[in-house]
Amino acid sequence: MAAPAERIPATVMAAVAAVDNRRLETIFNAHHATVWRALRRRGLSPEAAEDATQETFLLAAEKLNDIRPESEKAFLIATALRVAHSLGRKTVRWELDEDMDQRLAAGRDAGDRRADRQLCDLVLSKVDPDLVEVFVLYELEGLTSPEIAELLQIPLGSVASRLRRAREQFRDAAARVEKSLQKEGQS
Amino acid sequence: MTRPVGDPSERLLETDATDFERRVLEAALQQKPSKASTARMAAALGVSATAIGTATTAKALAAGAAASKGTAAAGASVLWPWVSAGVAVLVVGGVVVGTRSGEPTRVPHAAPPAVTAPKDPVPARELPAPPPAPADTPAPSPAAATAAAPRARAVTAAGDLGDQVALIDSARAAVSDGAGARALEILRRYQERYPAGSFRPEAAAIKIEALMKLGRESEARALAERFVAEHRGSLLARRVAEVAGLAQP
Image (cartoon, rainbow over all chains, first blue to last red; front, side, top):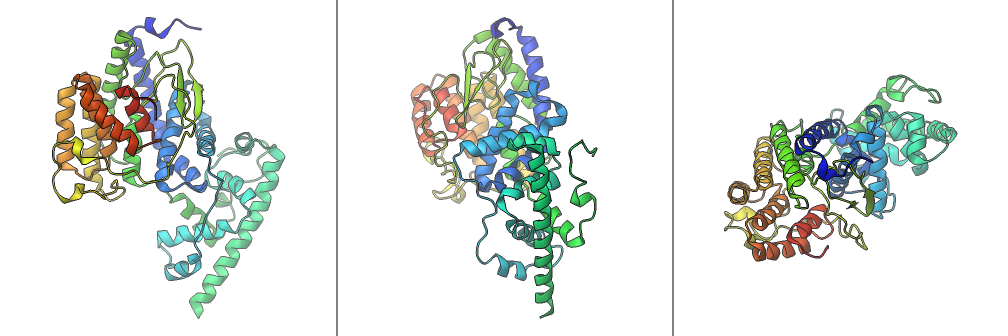
């Protein structure tokens, strides 16, 4: 190991800190929304997700030199999931209130972002919770299968099969929801 | 995106998603933290959030450099937002992270050095932060600051946010430079301008640190005790306890 930190000249430490800060800033701006989303999907409130996102980046800052640029996102999501886990929360995904369908019907006109998001929650809530995580990480967050396997500590084959089943369920659910919206639109 | 071996197939969005599926999937990606939330996170990390459009990077860098320098010279003193050297074990949210010994370790907005992991690392985290006690600051201007005003999340205009971030950043930089009085003055301005601001807890924490720097320790401790009680379990509370030399929350 290198010399104790006290012996490293202040100017060098300042330079290291400046470079690290630059990188932290870059990855924060590139990925904080992804991290925050991953935490929200674990059932954290927006406020709790904010705190946990902050913790995630603090941990990342600590290991900045160990993070390969091409695996930043996977590293951050993995860290976020550990942080979420440490919060001791049950893994709650897509908790929906009962009147979701009504509110959806009320605001379903295209272009309404909020309605679209509820639509999204609704469709994803119909996918098996064990499968949906793989689906979201792959389809939305753009992680690769090996990254997901590593992240969730499951075999690569399981990633593939979960993803396949998740897709089937997602497409089924989307078709059903779309149909019911169309029906309502006509009535 | 290249497709590594073992990937089952192209992503739905890139291939044969129906219009409706596409709409659903794209909506998922619209979910983002509010601007105020992003600004708070960036400020806590000592970085500049591009989405908010402030020019705080230089200041943050300067503060970081100053802090690193100070720490290297002064040894154990705790500086904001950088803690260099001396940090042996970092406890964040119950996760214990050993730092690479011998390397300059920088932890923005850092956790205290070598504390024992709290029994319940994250109590009451989901509860909205209570408003910071008003008594600690020169009489805040009117209505907005009154008792129940929750931490103003997502109601602030982006322009305000940039200004708020800049004020908090410069207060923090002043503390890092050892200019406690200047920090207090900046915080007073912040309090005046944004009685219900998005960074009141951060401002209160910096104020405590500034008071410590000025040798007004009993004042700082009193504020710190209240702060820790109100923000129990938060990173800031841990930091404040550390700065003011309280037992860990």
